[in-house]
Length: 465
Image (cartoon, rainbow, N blue to C red; front, side, top):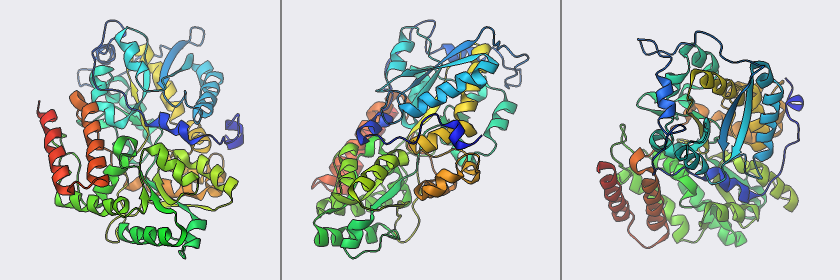
C-alpha cells in the first residue's frame, strides 16, 4: 500500500509543548479492584495454556457480525501533536482489517498517563495501554498486565516479529518475558542549527566526534554568536538520555537483575563531570525538556539532544526562521560511538478472555505492522520498528529519502540498549530520585561523585525494602 493511500492527512506540524504528553509515566503505586482488576489479565493468561506452558488458540472466536471492542488507552491520542496520526490508524483499522475480523478499535485519551490505572481500580474495561518503559515493572502490579508469551500463541508472535531487530524486542522484557512491545520510540538525536555553527566558524555537515569536541564547539559558539552551544535538560523527561550518556562511557544504571543501582562508578562520575562542564561554563541551557526544546527551536541554542518525536516541529521552526536543520547520532566519549537507548512508549496488554486476546492481537498486528508504522513515522517522526520499511517504495522510502534525519535514527536500531526499567514497587520514587540526582550533580556546585553516591545509596535503600 502506497504511503499516500495510507495517510488520510498530510504530515502535520504541531507545537513543541504537545511532545510532553509523550513523556509521562504511569505511577507505580496503588492497588486494583474487582472485575476489571489488576488480576484479570493474569487470570486470563492461564485459560488457554497447554501443560507445556504455551498458548494455543484452538478456534477463531472473532465474528464480524458481533464485533469485539478493544479499548486502547493512549497519551499520544490526546496530544495535539500526535492525535491526528492515531486517529488515522484507528479509522484505517476500523474500516479495514477490524471490519473484516470483527474488532472495533477505540482509543481512549489518557493525557497524563494515569487514567488507565484509575479505570482499572474501578473495574472499567482496559485492554491495551501505551506505557512508558520505565514503569513496566510497576504496571505488572498496578495494571495487571500480562506477558505476551502468556496470552498470545508462539507461532503468532514469531510470525509478527519477523523483520523486527532482536534487541528492539528485548526493550520491554523482564525476567526473560516480554511484558511490553516497543511502540512509539526513538534514539537520542543531536539536532543542529547549521546557520549558528557556520556563524561560529564550524562545519555543520559533520557531527562533533565526542563530548569533548562538542564542549569545544559550544565554547566557540558562545564566544562567536552569544548563543548557547547546547540545549539539554538534565532530567530529559524520563532520564532516557541520561541512561545513554552513562552507557556510552561504560557505566551502568541498574545491575543485570535490577536489584541495585550502580551509576556512581568511576565511569559514571566521569561521564557526569564531562556533561556538567556545559552548564557550569554557561555554554548550555538546561531547564525542563520543554524549555530546552523551545530554546533550540527559537534559535537560542545551536544543538539539542532529543528524540525524533519533535522532528516535524523543528522542521517547521527552521523553515519559518530560515535556518538549516541537520541531525546526527548523539556523540560518545573518547572518539567512540555512543550507545543509544530508547525514548517513548511501549504497548502493554491485559486481556480478560481468549476472545479478547485474539481481538487485542489484531490491533497490535496492525499498529506495529507495515501500515501502522508508516503512519507513526511519517506523521509523527518516531522510529519504525521495522527498518525495512525505510527502503520500501510502497511505504516509507520516499518519506525517509526526503527526511534523512529519520534514516540516522533507523540506523541506530541495531545498537540500541534498553532504557532503565525501574523495579516495580518503587518505580515512581526511583525515577524521581534519579532525575533529582542529575539536577543536583550537574547544575549546582555539589561534588559530582559524592552526589551520585548519596543518591545511589538512597535509591538502593528503596529497592531493598
